[in-house]
Image (tube, rainbow, N blue to C red; front, side, top):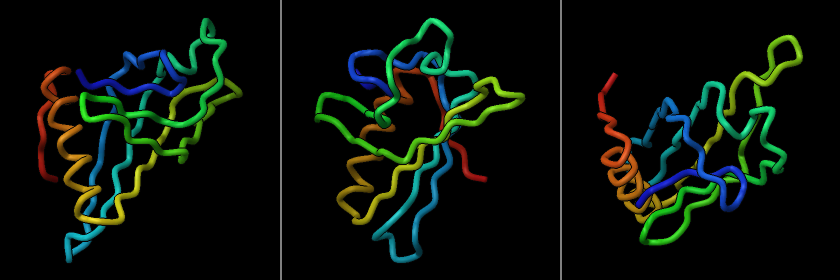
Length: 111
């Protein structure tokens, strides 16, 4: 079980484009998630976006760095940034991503 939520209790069904960067020392990194037309921005959703919650059997990883992208006044995308400040946070995030990728049939590719 690995899922992403923007409002507690409501799973996001749209699979994001995810970009990872890591410092040369390996002690910090950044994950940027881009959700095109996510359910959280749909007209049927009335819940507030309070952050991005990555939930799995180990617990929850939270980021409050969530921005909306609007085109002609209509919601188009959400961008969430999760910053890892230690190698432990990086390893925990990667364990979540392995579970999330397996559940959603995603592959990891280097650019």
